[in-house]
Image 1 (tube, rainbow, N blue to C red):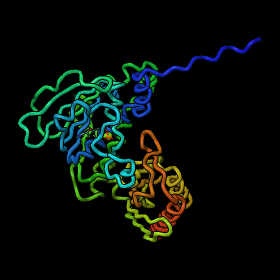
Image 2 (tube, protein in one colour; image 1 turned 180 degrees about the vertical axis):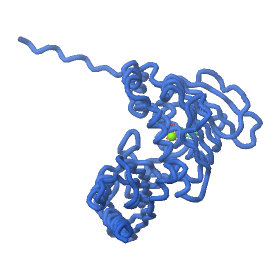
Image 3 (cartoon, rainbow, N blue to C red; image 1 turned 135 degrees about the vertical axis):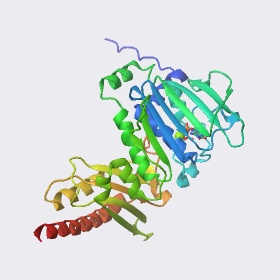
Image 4 (tube, rainbow, N blue to C red; image 1 turned 90 degrees about the vertical axis):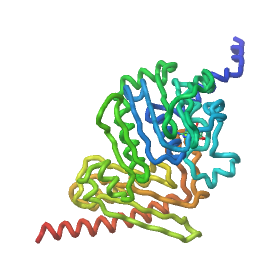
Length: 351
Ligand code: ADP
Ligand code: MG
């Protein structure tokens, strides 16, 4: 029998390519919220408020008081690979902004309906314009606006039936969104954050700009958490190994929780690092008699050329040079701090 004829290879339609790529950048409502908040932070905002309807599937709205978007840029704002943050690939080495790929807004227009309202400094009125599949649906309309930018994403995944269904069936994303904003709020303490469900009077996260990290942690995670934290700091400036600076707060021996809370920023990016998380968990379970899980807020700064921020489509993971060495140093420090906290507690209990 003759082999079957090979199937013909053809080029995918650009709109198909874009929708597939968009589904990777915006995996769930919470990923859209993360991108929008990062844009607001990149725009130098001092106040960011988020409103969510139906776990983000009906509506995600992020308003900021940042520098706004120029009228003449609105035409290409939501095209793929349009950005104000990066020009040459080499710039990635020293990039300070969280965004750089110009893909977030574009992606949202391929899997949802995006409306942007923005005003720049010195203007008498703002502009509002809606986008679909990367392009403006109409010329920007003049409108009243206060300061900054408001981005509304409606009907997320309206054109991805399977995604919509799985998200509707799973517990909705609202708690993930609250969790995300809580994390941003204790890192960017010079920015006030709020997050509420559409129509709700009470916000589920509400912070005001402050200079005290501990106050921020207290207002987000509760004073009972803030009261049981120890400040830690470490640095290594030996250029031959892996220079880093670490600063943070970790729970003491009196803190009790069933689940670990680990908030980690590396070079101001909110990331996951399972190796570091495990290293810290191990220390807590080995040191504390009661198996309480830790609360950890940690910010690590390394030379920009030692971290690759472009290893993951959601930018949730980064790869760090000599990660093991850094983790080990941090682990040793956490262990000694926790040990003395536990000894002090045992001593208190005995006397
Ligand atoms: P990136 O952040 O990677 O540049 P995005 O698609 O997220 O790509 O945004 C595209 C561009 O739109 C940004 O480079 C920025 O210039 C502008 N922009 C997006 N959101 C805001 C905002 N909230 N305030 C001001 N400018 C914004
Ligand atoms: Mg962005």
